Length: 383
Image 1 (cartoon, helix red, strand yellow):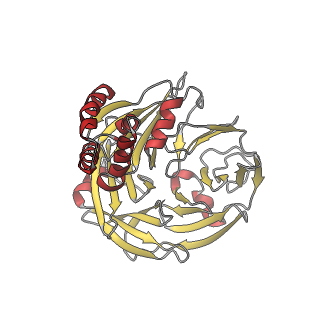
Image 2: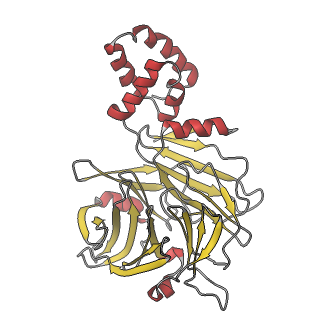
């Protein structure tokens, strides 16, 4: 059910006639459970009773789930950006308005959850609000890097590794203090990461206190604390299963670390899921991706750098970075334990130039962008 605002108003004039008691409220809640989140923004302004019914529907009947967002950026002037989001609650793709003042030149990249950035020799631009509508622009770090890790950790933006100029430390780390608006030099990345210091070889997760870095091929893991400017580790992620060829980590909404591992066997490829301990990095098995979903991701082949993971709330999106695939598989951790699996096919292929994020999006965030944007949200397709 996807009602335009004009039809929503017409429905509203009828529903308001019966909205005088609890039964009418229940009817409103049932109706709103079938209305796309994007349309509930206008519905919540019809009356106080509608606002209560919208809120109740989102809490009890059909809760919002993290959105998958695909970002593209043309490599030629005027360097236009576009974003296409999938709302799993409503099962629709939505074109997201972009701000008038955006970063000019690519490449556009994402590193974890909803953190989006462009790093050039002239500036660092980044965005980490749920719909990546607001951007900040700061001067670049002192050292120029080709493919560093860039991540938001608390009130710092960390730029680590990826050094390419002769004489530069390929493991150098600088952090941008968002409060003081200055760059600070930190301890370099551990020497064990010297051959894999580029972001393409590492999977990362970020919490409010630390940046966690995992070598995709070996599972060797380190973490960085911006407060002390120091590194800890290594910790070896050991799921207890042989043949893992790709380790990918993500951070759920409650701060828990999750591991998605690609297991290679002579017969087939399997993708397992483990929860990872905060201090000891012990891996506890949670489940395994069904074989038919693994096939949706496969493409021509899997490599250690193929799998990409984005996590938010209790949902993890898994995609193949190198297959030009349009299929993304989602893993949802149920409240009572266990995993629920589903997939979504995009109207646009995921390529190496596509930046992928995921975010918990609510009515307040949609309303804020609607007020600020000159464009409208556009329903692209129903999944």
